Length: 95
Image (cartoon, rainbow, N blue to C red; front, side, top):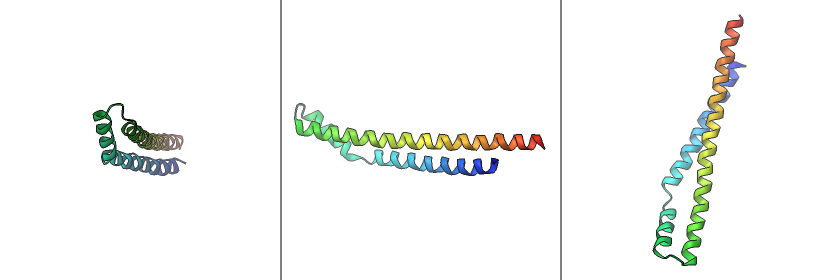
């Protein structure tokens, strides 16, 4: 039981960190958001530029949800690793 929790937890933590890092890289390379924000700032009241900026904001929100989901997945994995350690100590203490 302890070993399975550690293995599954480690895998979940690794996948979660990979997902979070991937979305951080996607956010860092998103030049369309900066261009849309700049165009909306330079042309206030222009519906087309504001619509592009809103679209970029929605895309950025989904990317941030991906980062948060990755962090939460890695947190679940770390919890399973900790649970595996506790289970291993209890098993050694019982024998």
